[in-house]
Image (cartoon, rainbow, N blue to C red; front, side, top):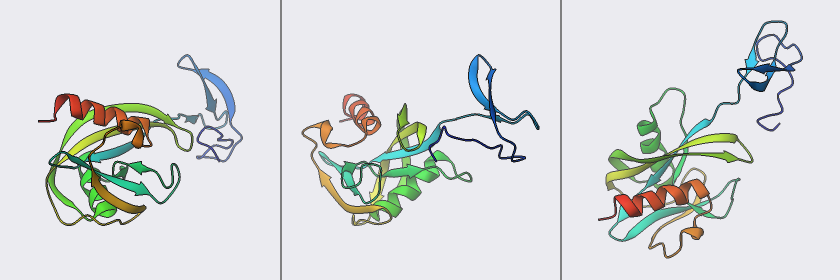
Length: 168
């Protein structure tokens, strides 16, 4: 099921109808009053810099399986975005960081997940040897000659901001 194809109420199981709520057409349950909002999913992406190279991972899952991206993933319900960034970095690359610094927030729409809110961080004081884990099949430090090498537009926007504002 796609993110916008909800048919039944998650509270009572009644068939949803469409109704204008807050000036938008939304799915609505006439029995219990539930409104099906399609809110953005929070996701993190992490920039790890080693001199003039950036750490990238090759995805082992869809979307964009087999393509290069920044390490990252979904924020769990019980963690902060900073904790998620540190966790995802370790899960995908075997690297640990002392902390992260927010670079940019990007809103976009994923064909698979719908609206997403991407929080781009820089990993500070990282340790370890990079090796692929979790849903990554490869990991490497690379000097990015062309941002189009990176599959997700939101990651390219975060990198652009990083290069223009934080690259020292």
